Image 1: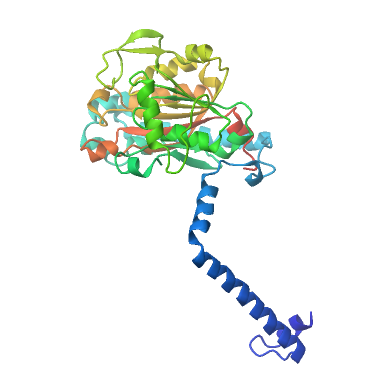
Image 2 (image 1 turned 90 degrees about the horizontal axis):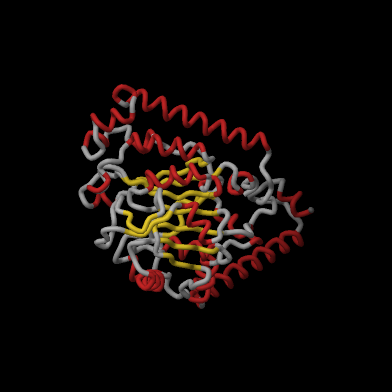
Length: 377
C-alpha cells in the first residue's frame, strides 16, 4: 500500500522510500526472469509444446470446458423472441419474392429467368432471398479436414452444425448421414467431437469395402480411423418410397437403379426412435424424400438437419429444380419445426464453369435440445 500511494504522486518519478523502490525493482527482476525462462523452454522444446497444443485441439468437447449453465432450459420468453425473429424472416422472404419475382411468383421466376442462365445470378440471388431465418449460439463447420495427402487431391465439404459442444451432454446421440460419395470427413469429425454417438452412413451407390477404405485414407494424420460399432455403413438410399428399383435423382457410379427406403422405414429398421443429426446429400431426391418425412412425422423427431439442395445451374441433372421447389420445401420443413440458421452456396460447380445452384442449408428443430437447452452455451 505504501508503494501504491507513493507512485500516485508522480507516475514517472515517484517520491518513494528507498526500501519500497528496491522492492519494486526486485519484483520486476523476478518477473522478467520468469518470462525469460518460459521463452527459453518454448525455444528449446518446440515439438513438445506443439504436440500438446495439437492434441488439445483434437480432443472432443469435455464437460470441464462447458459452461455450468449450458444445459439450462431456456426461458419461454427467450424462445418466443426467437420465433418472432423467425416469423419476421419468413415474412421478409415472401416480400422479396413479391418484389423481385415476375408476377410475384417463384414458379414464374423459374420460367422467365431460369437458374441455369447468367441473368439469374444478378443480385439479389436465390441465396440472398431464401436466407436463414433463425439464430444459433455457436455454429461450427464440421468436416472438410482429412489426411494431408487426401486434402491435396480432392475438395472436401464441411457442414454447419449448431452448438456441437452439446453433443457430449446428450445421452442419446444418433447421427444419420445419407450420401457419402467420396468424402467421409464429416462422419469422422463427428465422432471426434462426441465418441459416444452412433454414426450410421447410408449410400446405395458405393460399397462397404470402398467406404472403409475412404475412412482409413481420410482420417487425419496420426489418428486411428473410427470403427464399428460407433461407425456403421448401410447400402441403401433415402427417398419418398421404399423400393429396390429406384431410378430418380442423379445416380452416381453408373448405377441405373438403387435400393431406397423412406426415413420412417429406415429408423424403424435400425431401431432408432429419434435422430440427433440428419445429414442429407442425395443428389436431387431431397425434393420428394423430405416432404414425405415431414408427412409421416419422422422429421419432427430430428434435432438438426444438414441438407444440400441441388438446383438448376449447378449440374445438368438438376434442371427441373428451381426457386418454386425451394419455396415449397422450406415451407414444408418449417411446419415440422425446422428453422434454417445457415445457407452456404457450393462453389465447386463454379470452378467447372457452372453456376452456384447448389447450397448447404443447416436447420435446427425449434423443439429440440439444441434450441430449448442452448441458453448459457
